[in-house]
Length: 72
Image (cartoon, helix red, strand yellow):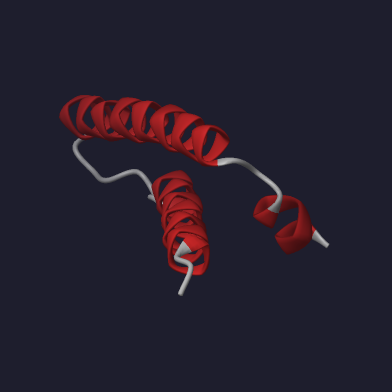
């Protein structure tokens, strides 16, 4: 069900989502650096991995849309 709704998004929507996720990823990376400097051990990277998975899904969907949009 989610893949159908994901496929209905426009190129602009996908780019906007990528932009938001990249900002969130950068903020999370900075937060992890601060955590390490304060606490002297690494914080679990679950959130970073989730963000990366979402970014990869969006990238794959954009590539699929571009591939399918080519008319022979």
